Image 1 (cartoon, rainbow, N blue to C red):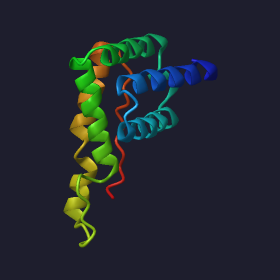
Image 2 (image 1 turned 90 degrees about the vertical axis):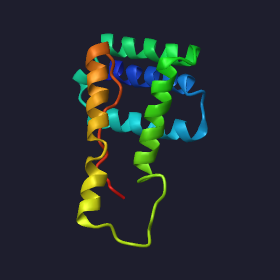
Image 3 (image 1 turned 180 degrees about the vertical axis):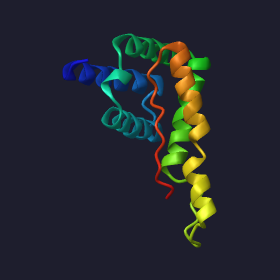
Length: 135
């Protein structure tokens, strides 16, 4: 895929995703950060034209109706928001132990595996990257 095609894929995915989440404020920033990370760290083979087209169609369905697609997008963004904030309630009073850090860094591995399986079975290109910052 050429550099121009990757840029167009990013823009189309971002635009359709914003429509799917109805431009809601906490979700739009989480989406932007996650999509940027996926395109910066991912490879060009992750964004084949057919996969991008399937993802755009998935996002159009999510924007059109309040069905399964919309709920998947909404829940993914909520989980990514919680992951980026280090959990729903941050406790800064105590220093996390080594085991707690291990749990925080590996807690989302199963979710990312499920996203990869969804991508594989439906031919999508949803970002399935683990952010390894436990803070």
